[in-house]
Amino acid sequence: MALQLWSTLKEAIVVYTGLSPTTFFTLLVILFTLYYIITSLFGSSDTHQSHGNSRDFGAEMEPLKPPVQIGEVTEEELKDYDGNNPDKPLLMAIKGQIYDVSQSRMFYGPGGPYALFAGKDASRALAKMSFEEKDLTGDISGLGPFELEALQDWEYKFMGK
Image (cartoon, rainbow, N blue to C red):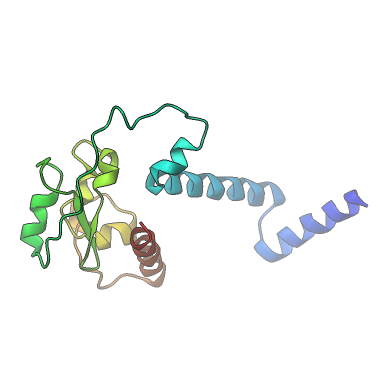
């Protein structure tokens, strides 16, 4: 019974995806791994502490400053919030909407892997999954449907934080 089910499943994978079962399951593992990595980058600190880390970091860290209401800012003014001034929040924008990423300073702050997005509207770069300077802009004209969908996913992720 199980062998027949496995044979049927293998045939269905080939018919519906055009991939061999080995390739299909390899891609599935890679996608789950990427999903886990990306969600862990933007997950809350509660998520990370629930993975068996019982150490109390609260005593070592100073409390977070309350969010700063900065109102309307120009693209030029946004550059001042790139993390180089510890007295200012760490901000970035997607499609003109500003997000405070101060809680993820290790990622978006100076020296972090995504530091180039801080203080800028990174819409095009996020949509294209690009780290190139020319893509660090809010201009999303000419993007394809998959890039716009990726940008929308990023926007939802930041809105949820």
